[in-house]
Image (cartoon, rainbow, N blue to C red; front, side, top):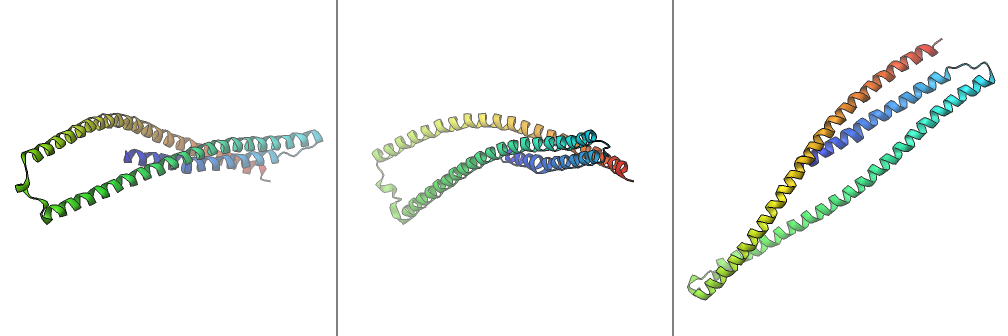
Length: 204
């Protein structure tokens, strides 16, 4: 389970902080190239001037449209992250409560040990009736423990199956992220080639 969580966080970092930033940089570079290409036009008439301005505006609007759509997607991701963080807080609270239960159990058992050490451990005072009563209680508790153990075992089997499914998805996502990184780097290479062509085109 911890390995899956670490894998998810690794994928999140690679996708959101890695690929996303690289892809956004590519977007900015593509837009700059587009502006440079269009700005190189030297209009001879008012119609050509309008043509140039409309192309520049078209590029700006396409860029802003993309940014707006991306912002909506990021906001959706942030909403999910808030929900995930709330669940993690609940999980931490549950773990803290379980830990408190362990501490209290240990404290009570320490007290019982101390009482036994102080003289309450006295076999001579035992009777068949008190032994039978204790044996009866032990049997009832053992039965309850067994029922809960079977229930826990079934739940663990279900969780193991789901964890494996999650592991498969995590590994598939990791592969997709790396493949997308390759595509992003390929785009960056093509953008650099375009930039060189633009520089050559606008140079005197």
